[in-house]
Image (cartoon, rainbow, N blue to C red; front, side, top):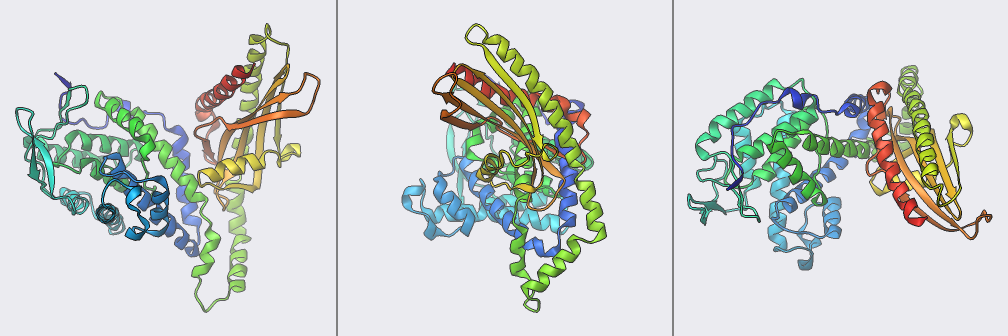
Length: 496
């Protein structure tokens, strides 16, 4: 009995095209506009960011395939300094450090070839894909094949050549996942590349998810297909000037589940996973410290001159006009703040009614921000939460929030939704995050909290830009608020 029987790949369907990534579309435009506005002196900072991103992708892709294991500490050291064997202790990995470095460098080299293809406008062809496979498998000589009776045997790995034997893995439950038979690989790859060319104007995240899944359906090589699929996903994104996305080891099961859902014609989970990872990477890129770029200024200019030149550009008329356009994102934030206040008011009243038999509760829902004179509230909590995921919350720009509280007897829940700018430069991109504090009082009349428990409620931020149409994201924002609040209410209910 087979769990998944092979069938020829399908083109992008109308169902795929309408996957709701509305919140991403304005982010694409805002990110590209931000990159175009950056001075050349900032390119060094972004190159360093991209190098670290490529190293992280190179490490995580092999862990996903169970080629090796590597502890988190050593992972971060290799990402920061480069793939140097001396950094790796034998206890930090389950293979020889020298072999690990060889594999990591191969994976890094494959991504570098992708970047070269993009830079030189080299089209994606079977020849390019073969070249990438050769690079990825440079230090892998053999692999496992399966004969018609299901028996495994070791064979030399064909590098840069499509498979000659079936490579259908048997799962733990005894079922088999059938990939494309060797005889059909050539025609299936022709279809994949032909359709890919036709999708240049489609949403890049949806195309990346489609291409990634269809490539894994074909599984054209005897081994290395997963690693190669993620490298090719990087190519799909880079050609639209987006950033590589990293599927972390902790996301392995979510990633596999999303691929399995795509096997039954539901690409949405994979597209949404890719959108979430791309959004996170863009927000981290916006937080790169471009001031560090002064270190790369020509020796003929001193630092003071460079700063003066920078200020002249910063306060030029065109720049001020552009800043005014980017700050239209504050108008979007105010609309979402109003929406959040209404949603939280309704939800907290429902909560009040639900616990009336346990205790009489008091609720409060209020707004904050520059227009209320209290924009400095919660800056520490927001900044600390952002720093944990390598983002920079920019409080030199406007900050808004909604605070909702409920107190029953000795227990109080404080739920905050913050709307703040992301990035060290004004980008026109903001995010909403949600966090809560549980407070316990000595008695019902005591105003002094004796115990506080702070926690983040939103697993992912809600991102919007100066180009966001509020009416188009209202439903998604309401769902985001509801999901975050559910986390807080669950914790609060456990305390009552």
